[in-house]
Amino acid sequence: MNYSILSFFLPFTGYPYQGHEVACPGCGHENHTRIAGIDRRLKRLPTVACDFCGLIFTNPMPTDAELSTYYSDFYRFDYQAADTAPKEKHLRKRRLEAAGRVSQLEGLLPGTGRTLDFGCGSGEFVGAMLALGHDAHGFEPGDTYGSHAKSLYGDRITVNGWQDVTYSDQFDLVTCFHVLEHLSNPVDALRQMAAWAKPDGFVFIEVPDLGKTHPNKGFGALHFAHLLGFNQHNLIVAAAQAGLAPERIVAPTGIIFRKGTTEAGSVEAEAAKGRALSEHLYAGGKMISSYFRYQVGKLTGSNKRPG
Ligand SMILES: [Zn+2]
Image (cartoon, rainbow, N blue to C red; front, side, top):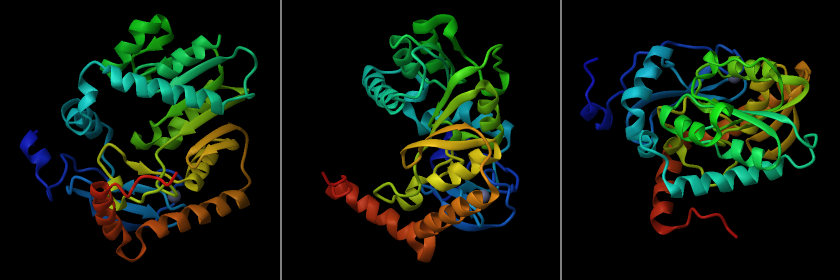
């Protein structure tokens, strides 16, 4: 490919991909509204919002081949830690997050359950569940982090992508933290999570929030690796396509689902709320003004949450 590292850093130029036009990856609706032409690095990135559920997504969407080129050649420039062994500071932060997620599960699982972490990164959540006596497993496609997890937890960790992993037994709980927004086919992934969960099992999803979380970064929230921008409502809509219904909402975009159907009426109601929340982000050129307000807020420290 004739695409250099230098071009990757040049603002107002595109990313190394052609992509293809897609319907909404969350709900399948064909119509969408263009909301931004650039991302937080001021590079060209065509971003739209679904006219039905308000899901924000890259369109044209990169193909699987283009995504794998991006992850092998460029991802490390977007996430500098991604290529080297995880640093202690990173691991400490991840262990705290894992402890927080464990506490959100309070009372949900039997004494000791069988659990699977979908995209387990460096393995902190698997470690936290093992410490509680659960039969915890995980897989991670990223070699550096996956190998770190495997060095700690051995056969409980598989270093591979979700389409290439198989398990012979189902799980009481499947978790997926900050992975879904990287996938061009989130509903297929959610269906696989539902299939891995036992009939009375749970699927716990957490994604970045492009809905209510303060502060609104405008187009500063957009970047190439995040193909999808969810809010609570369009996350529920996407999960409904995969036969998952919300059981416990633990954060704006942290939801524990159970297997079950969501009535068409409530899917439509969630989609309307998702759309309204998204429109609130970008209506009237707000993506641009929010971005600059956010950047100024970073300089002055006023982005910090009150309290
Ligand atoms: Zn949609």
